[in-house]
Length: 579
Ligand SMILES: Nc1ncnc2c1ncn2[C@@H]1O[C@H](COP(=O)(O)OP(=O)(O)OP(=O)(O)O)[C@@H](O)[C@H]1O
Image 1 (cartoon, rainbow, N blue to C red):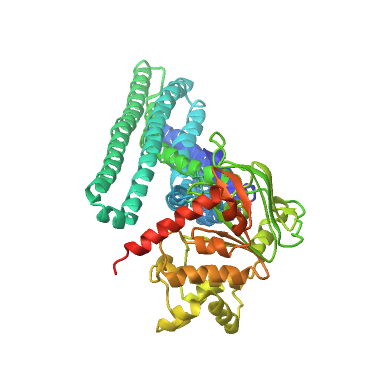
Image 2: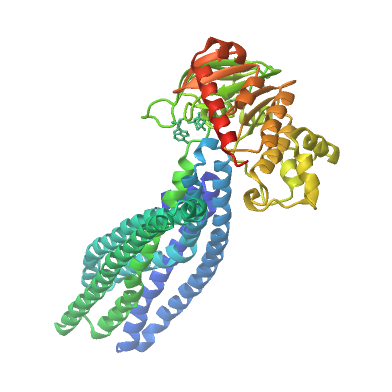
């Protein structure tokens, strides 16, 4: 557990934590000596010569003063360390997460990350301040005191020591019961949190298709599972913790009976017997409470396990000596890729080239791998086999920062920050002048959107851009990509219905951009395909055909068939609109 704690914190921050843990153990050991010194003091006071208590009392006072000093220093260090742990873990998680491949950030992972960064970190922060000190007090203090006890009466010390393995076994059983059930509850809590989010996000669909009750049933089932898991945790944890507390008190009772028998038998002085029993009684409460701390430690251990699982996610390997691209040509060379190691490949032997100054349309049925091509180009993932090159250099050798400068991707699910339109566009270049913003607004069609909004550039877009329409969001996103001025641009044309003006705008922007850049468009509309210089037609993760759009249409193969079907669908859509 402590190892997993130090691993989560990283080597550079583990020094102060080790010091705080060691000081806590030392404080508990000194406390054990303080308790042990009570025995000769009490034995002397209750015995025939009370004055013999004076030197022992002086020693007791000195060790108590040392204990008080160490305890104060320990508290100070623990609180300092506790305060820095949350910052350190957030930094470690943040630093690590930015190096993870973009493909790692699925919806479920984002939810998990948020729980790890809140609940997981807060559990870990509690360890040095609220969990570890009382637990160490409960274990180390009695241990030292029992060792010291053997100096006065080895038989009572041995009786105490004999209880230790039994108590340890019950303690471990209780801890394991709590740890296991807490981990199981964590899993269903994640599921329930995911369902709540899903239920909120899916309201439009659920209401449109009368599925509110069905959707609710799924949420209800997840919440019921969470309730059952919490009950199970309670039902298993409470008896285990009570069982341990009972074992501690029973052990104390047995030691008590044994000491009384020794005293009655005349082999143990009565004053010493009383003093020993006072000492042993002093441990009962902290020892009995140790199981609660042990359970809390297991729960913190589960939180740390989740933190370490995020920290163990493999970042994209960065090249030792990054090589900048020698141009903007995009090349896929025999690329094979699968999202999972055991599943079938999503791309299989994909090869094509896209020259600077051209517009390439990626076309193909749904699920054929077009978006995956865009993701590999922006290095969301690395190809399993083959090479993705920009300017003749494999994207793995370019280095993430330079690659990000070279490639701009405008996906369909545009994410905007809850800030002004200007701030959202300036994300690409925080120092951009107003003239630059106006230039990209004109080129992306954002200018007409701004003209219709009373606050223009200062309009707040709402969380995730909810205050703007789909077409408006896409224009902001295109303006942002234009401001970044990357030599390679990938545009994911909206597959959902856009108005004619927006459709024409995306095609026109792609054409304009391709004058001095390499532009790839994931094309869904015949008009965009027709405007392209080249078409790469994907089917089942393979390039089925590629060439100029006119040639492919004339050839009458898979691409021609696909475009005709789309044209028929669009014609149907137009004629189906109300007059
Ligand atoms: N993150 C992912 N994890 C696992 N499989 C995925 C993931 N994303 C896509 N896939 C699978 O990869 C295949 C190709 O998907 P991709 O999104 O690249 O196709 P597409 O041609 O862009 O489809 P569409 O036109 O419908 O957007 C599909 O079978 C899809 O189910």
